[in-house]
Image 1: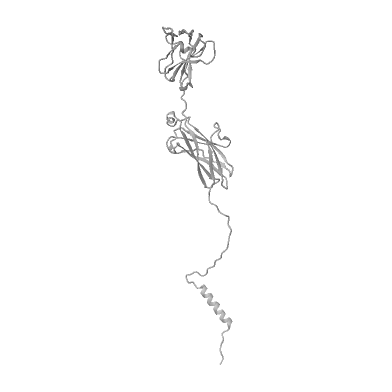
Image 2: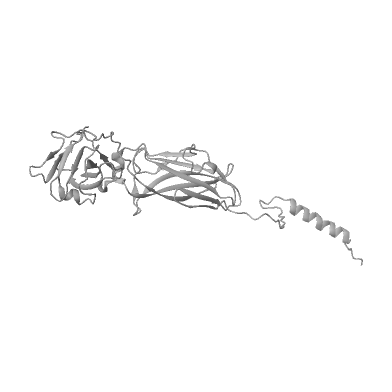
Length: 326
């Protein structure tokens, strides 16, 4: 009895056919999955961060760029604070001017950025869109000038003599179209000084004297001197009157022989003893003027012409006086 054997090639062919049918038959799932892995090297990435420092003293600042790239900077806002750190409203018309480079500190040169206070408490925006370049590790200078020329005196009076701090917010931004930016604050001192009031020029007192040019007392022991002073708007108040004498024929500064408070009558009584106490030679003729002291300490004054001549002869205690022609 013989036995039938399937050839090996035939069996293998049937298996391959079955595999093809299974793989090509739709079943709603994924027919095959392939994947591969590998390694790739990329440069180190850094975040957008600017190294920017502002420091300095008084009205001059130094700006330093420590970034790995160039930046541009400009002041954004400016505000005032008092010695206690409280906010102070910049009076209307107060002007802040910023200069850089070769123009730094040169007030006559045009400012690169300016701000003029409109009045109010909010920080004042600094005008001028152009930013100044700041290279890496090459510091630049920025100077501030504050002016109160356009501020009304009534608005400055509450701040007169105060030392304020001017706080400027400075922004640095990356070059080109980048959006990286950072800000720093710079503080500079500023003392408010009320400008001196402009007064009309004051002429010397009208001389010769009102009434008698010089009048001696009945006992011949004193001379009574009287003078006038202009009155009217703009004429400053007199702190005190000084009667001053010097020997006739000399050119030195006259010596005070009598002082009279400014609010009293415009006259002075000089005795022979007071004249001798000036230390000048006795029995010598003296010429006399009146000084109007306008500020305490005699820092501002107006002198009359020499308008009298007086003499105290010997030890008699008498005094002779006469008015000089105007």
